[in-house]
Image (cartoon, rainbow, N blue to C red; front, side):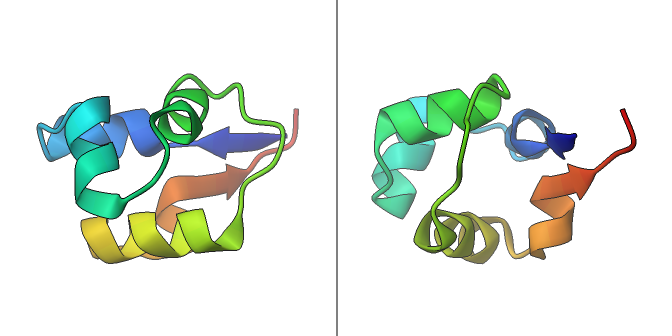
Length: 67
């Protein structure tokens, strides 16, 4: 199972979905799906934009767990 830590990162940076969408150019729905861990797939460009915004690695956003 892949766990998404976007909600934690957004909380730490005190940014909401709308502001993150504006800052990254990502679709609000894409961010919402990741935030609620409902996304079935993630575009590499979206991951790149999130990593650039949060100055982090892909592994800080996504984590593979044994569930």
